[in-house]
Image 1 (tube, helix red, strand yellow):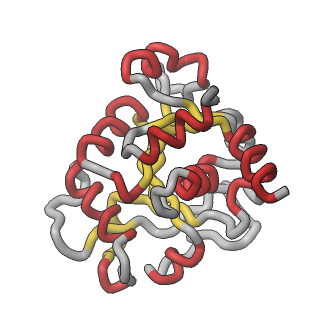
Image 2: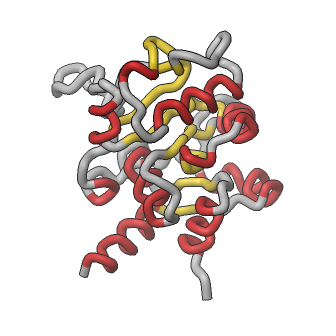
Image 3: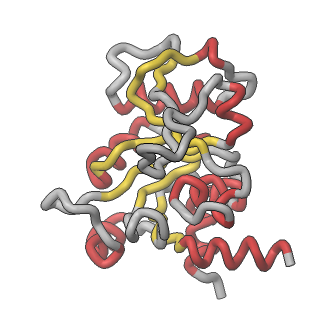
Length: 203
């Protein structure tokens, strides 16, 4: 019998959006996620409409280095704990940069084979997050989880995530989005279950 994590991985592999729950570093915030290689303007628009949070691109340290990206605040002072690099825009092929199509294009450019700092400009409307090298087992948060999920699904090593706000502007919890999950058939990937799967695979 397939569990919730397996159903989420199948959805990610098929290019669909899933929910990531169980972020231990952000007080239980939940995120929408899709594999970056499957990003579309429709996916970006869905995240902007139903997530309402900041739309971010989770990347590995290796990809960040190829793109010339580093942490905005690598130190410990005045640290939010969010591993942001500077915001980016595709160097070519965008107009204002903020439209769903433009942001999807920027993501595709950033994750393309051979992409480098020459292919992006800053600042922009896509916000990269640089994951820890050890993935979700090193940092149990949505950024690392999204990359590990994409990898397990055979869908690359980058992901687009967007935290979910409630209608009243407060950050949503999984119980707040039952209607959204039901309406769109969203699968839910729990970070705890993901860590257990990875640790089991390594054992």
